[in-house]
Image (cartoon, rainbow, N blue to C red):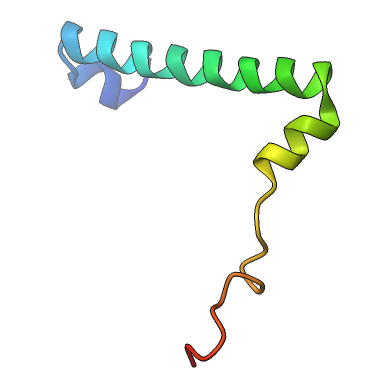
Length: 59
């Protein structure tokens, strides 16, 4: 247990644990979706490069 966790109330600790578990579930769902159909997953979640996301004429 970290020093910050010791100063948190029980409710705050449970909220923190809940959030971490939600993140883990979301991550595992994405891993599962990727394993089941990598091409569809990549197409759906394709991220633009920061270099390509600039709008023309915005300089």
